Image (cartoon, rainbow, N blue to C red; front, side, top):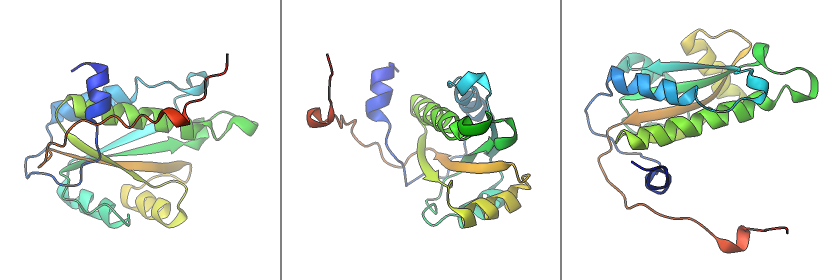
Length: 169
């Protein structure tokens, strides 16, 4: 699939089949995640791939809007202990967002459905997911990406709005 096609085809998926996500696909998604840019190459992230259905249920329960029947998930976690110092410490958020988008696009490329469920900066879901996954205090759950084989195949769409584009010459 060409990049432009993946960009237009990528949609939030909230209905999944019962087919499990393969180890090979999970590996591909992890590679995509770590191909993202990172401020000063600090790479302050960890990725928790969840295929165990009981653990997945516990993670889904930590979130308000996530009970969609996904068969796998990747929890993108920022490790603030590896983040940049001083006023640049919050760049870990951008690094994790870039990794998340790479996962979503690669999932589309693999024919998987996905949906980005935000966690950070919500204190209660952060604490709950830290507990479920046994994370350290400096490991902050950024988001949960639910994954699976989609039940539907929505049409690609272009959400371009010219009025929101401002070119300065």
